[in-house]
Length: 413
Image 1: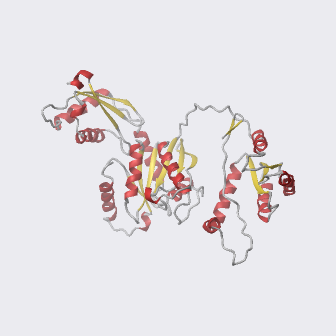
Image 2: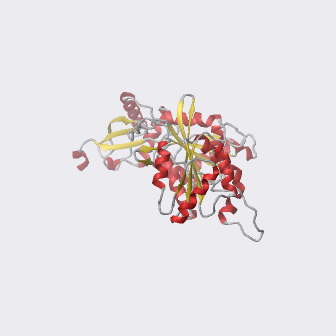
């Protein structure tokens, strides 16, 4: 976010929970019931956010006064060397605003009486936050992020967050057997063999008819946007369930966005195997993903670490393929040989290809100048693409094939 010209990242964390004794007759709220199994994980995520932050804002409820949970959070924050401010929220009127001074008893930094509902007092709080941020170079909106961006996508509960944690060697994402734990895309920056990489963990993408209104709907939209801003997509599928229509749909999203792709078959350790299991499973994958036969497959176990080291290696290989450049002379020689081996079919007039060149990388883009684009059949376009792939290393990377009439006069004829 931006406040008075200062750009910074705002991280909202899950609540550091302290369950209060209650009557057994008092039911848990849906939020409490749904998160009760994740108290320690949520707390660990919040502690990591505190560790990485420059400034910490502790939010309290002025209508409740100081609670045992506030005391526990304050004890954690008193042990840090961070700048800490207390936001006494729900101070929606004058008396409540005056009550906010009670929170100075927590022994933390300055207390700001605010109303998140009405926006009262938030400007003063933000002024204090910005003033305590470390000085950094002026933000350049035109500066390009040159890191390799890898989005980890897939259906809910296939092991995306487990894979991320294995790649990082730490519990950066909460892992749960309950589908839907990850609600937002999470960016993590690492360096692998000198290559800066941004790993993007996403919420599971469900079938459209099963997407609930509200939080889950927006989490799916964010997952799709993560694919759009990624260079490489790791599509994680569950080996115990096989390929589903939704797996194919997600792969189709990556293809539409012209993103490089590696299919990660997770939970391979849970599959009963013999010498034929992997070839048979790979044959199934080739059949189910026949619309992208150039995609590599990798069989892993995020739980045991099996072949984890190959995940980023494969991602780098398909990323490098995005920048492979075919010289014009060899390209046209290949096209001539392809035509000699298999000439375009004709119904009266025959398609002629006069010239071809690669005009762009990332993704590789080829332009073919022909006599009439209406004579081009999709099957022949695929044949030319397969000829290119057989000769050059474009594994895992889609190719953009553009066909243009040599001139407008030929097109009109």
